[in-house]
Image 1 (cartoon, rainbow, N blue to C red):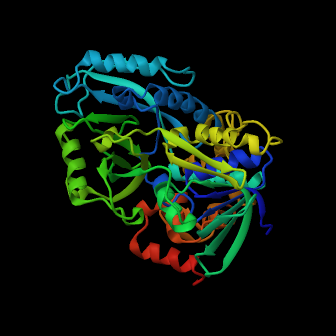
Image 2: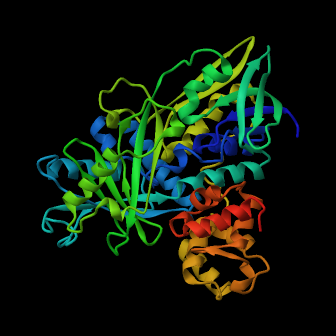
Image 3: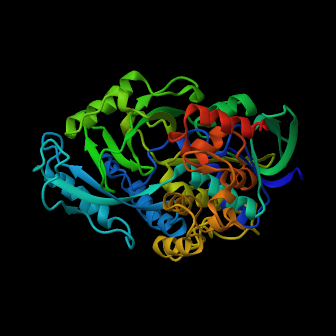
Length: 492
């Protein structure tokens, strides 16, 4: 492995992998390190939405919303397998926000950026019998769903195919520079070995650890402070048979989403809670759990209890400290901070951001560094599909898969489509019957998929496969989980 790079990137979440993809495609020599698995923190614990952020209009974040809405269109085009339109219903709570205010906000949402893929907002015709008050006014609008952790993996995969070196489970333990080059030391978290890399520029995209990395690795203060805001979610059996989602208002001005999830479940979240502990310790609290249950139970005729919860997760969002009192009001915008001097090679740090604008953030990061790499190419990621996304449409490709693999159960074929897109052909290469997929670990998980994920997507543990590459952890029994863990560790 060469240790001389143009860019060294610390952080294997959506911002780090997005920057790595863009940079490698511009002809730069790139290495990215991540102390855990790719997408192991904030980037796999989101609400899984590509959206402009309707509620951010209320906070005056018009530039952010406009950029996010424009990016929504871009991402729908370049990743149609893992990103697709999602219809929302927004019941009006007149004591919180009058109908005219919401209607005005939706009009802005429809018109702030060019919209080719999604319909305009409207008022629901007829009653919604799932709600306590089925005759209340309900607005409908569209955003998009995303498999967040797969978005990270596919950016890393694209970066690798463009020549980048991707190093999951390599922790940066020190970073220093001489007059022209950064030197970083990485510790392999699996075997304890150390490697040293050199780079002409360094990017700190460590997410919740962006500030602490300055103290730990750079041994100096961070130029900005961040606020860690915890967002938690619960997963319950599917609340309804429809494919639409709900956006629920609360008296505390927060918003809770109820989203269709993995065919048989509903995803409910999120919370906004100030978090002052290490990011890796984040878990949903009893108070957050009850808050989410209460919110749903206040709106729907079907009532939920803690016994209905099949899974839960919490993520910590690293947001710029803009001195807002309420966590839900802290800006979701990002800041790129460049430090350089004659005797100081460039250091670019990423503060804040949201998954929807990751590609634009990456583009801006590379444009910021352009003067240090004048021979590098221009932005290219807006029109280049992510791996597996090179299809005419989901409908036509679904028909292609059905024709080519009629022996594959429909539920598995559909999941492969929305996980791997055209790379499904690689996964199923030379296989002509279900038994040729190898050992069945449980749920919809077969040995062929496990081996594909190990070979092409850096999966090393059962958790990597069950929660970040797939969501099959929702379906496996404890005994089946043990079987997969034994297989991954070499115990057959």
